Length: 448
Image (cartoon, rainbow, N blue to C red):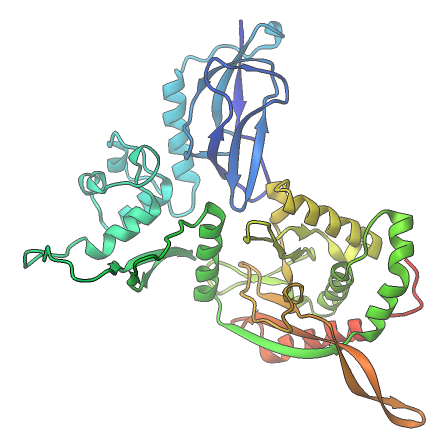
């Protein structure tokens, strides 16, 4: 009987680990080639891991909720087929494999240098929990005493952060057992964000809960979004500039060509590809908007590629940002196909982790919700994000050779939030104006 290792696959250049969210096969179950064995999560994307072999799932080396390093062995599949091509048996037991891999995950994760004392515990702790415990000087005995809310009683990040404010609190009086109100108060808790080489602990206010109030647990994606937004506002001093663009030419051109375009190409022509083309052109004119600040906060990384992310709302109400790679190298047809493909697969939760990585600038369409403008939060480690509002008809003064006239024009507000550490008002303002210029000067005679 041949045996094969099931490996946590590589899912993108910057993806180092993934969380197992569900095993779809139990030990002893038969598996066909390409049949899903487990589901994993990386950042905002959930993915299914298929089996490259046919056989029986002999051993699951990790549990649901475990964080696993890319390239680690996560299971063993036995098979009678292709016995001659099987790997030579390993001398390590499955239990040994798991312990070694967990150690590798902890060492590779940011800020998760493993303290040998924590390794002496018979409980499993994630790299982030160990990192917070180490920075706060929490001993192994104290860490073991924290009540966990995770799977099988594991201590989560939320558990240890909730524990910290009351860690050394002394009770000086007996509790009052009488209750004369229908409201309770949630104790103040903390949240954390990894900023450079530091974990920043942020106090959160106590919140009262009244009778009839509903408490809704955030899902995994919403928690990630919340952490990223808090981190971005902490890292980058945000400034927002605004401009109102006359997009009449752009609107009229799209109205003229969209039916023939869809009939010929089988693709709907939305405004998003047009906006992305204008943004990519403006970035080439102002490349210092296409930068990042390194973790020290003292070096600027000027990006070679122009990768434009487009914020997309999911049916769940959460947000995801697939990325159009090398947008400046694509023609309008190429951008349109990429936009439609990514948007459709985003709604069906079919994006791969690599397709939400590597963005250098982000576009978000608040006009899709009927809003005229917004003040978006920068998606780190980028330094700018553009929001486009809804397009509205307005009366406007039109300059003609015969003099000024009043006409009906199509207007849209653009708002650019940028990191004031490296983008000053002159750069932010002139870049935003350039985007508007490309929109206003859209060639109504162009073909696509």
